[in-house]
Amino acid sequence: MNSVSYMVLAFLAGLVLGTLFFGGLWLTINKALTSKIPALWFSASFFLRMGVVVLGFYYISLGNWQRLIICLFGFVVARFVVTQLTKPGAEKLLVQKKEAGNET
Image (cartoon, helix red, strand yellow):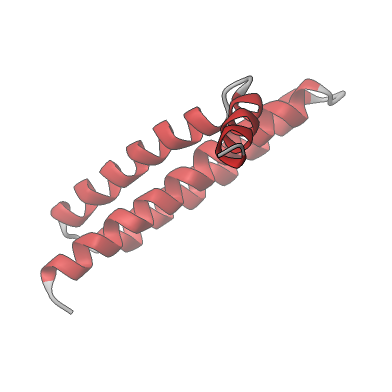
């Protein structure tokens, strides 16, 4: 593989890691709100999510700082995507868009 392929794969891996991290955070918050012991949810989720992300960054970079930066960029992009998809009322907006698309 050439250098560009590695960079694209690093970006995609960053997207996956970011989606796992921030999607997991969203799920944790939803579960902890109804739990009798929310501190356990937050603690366990934090260590699990951080462990996965740190190991992912380590294996993706393999000592190459350029791949690490590209992966981090994908991670940040995933943050914005997950934030937009999990906004309160996002479900209503998606339903409205689907209905508007079906009317034509």
